[in-house]
Length: 160
Image (cartoon, rainbow, N blue to C red; front, side, top):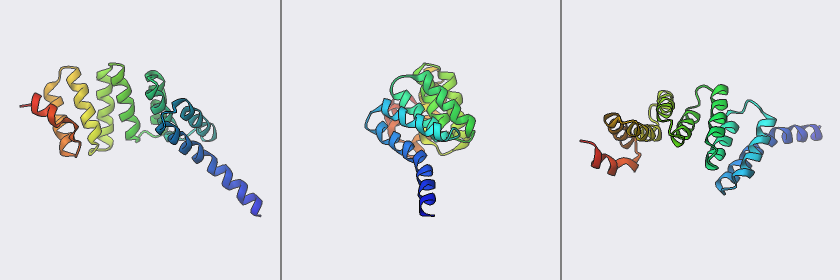
């Protein structure tokens, strides 16, 4: 009996271990090692949206924005209410200068989490990039009201 419980525990633990180890490696800037661990987590559970999202984050750190977008999209296919995956995909689209696509993803992240200060902040940056200064100011002010102070100086310099 102990043996079968132990084996079950190891089997369950392995997916979480791979995911956690990938997170640790990503935090240490070992992006290739992190991707390897996320690949293992996905192999063990192909429906783990967090593993796809986190692998996308590591790819983003390696400037593989198209690969990151692919992983974020897979995470969204698995969990269509995953606001962070929409936010991250928007960020990768921003990096590819697809500002309209980024705004669309930030819109969805905000729809899912109306208090997502980072999404308002990043949407303001994307809106500024497409020439929507009024929308950028509105979003930056909203981000500030939600506790994201990174736009305070920009708002004071660019918004009436």
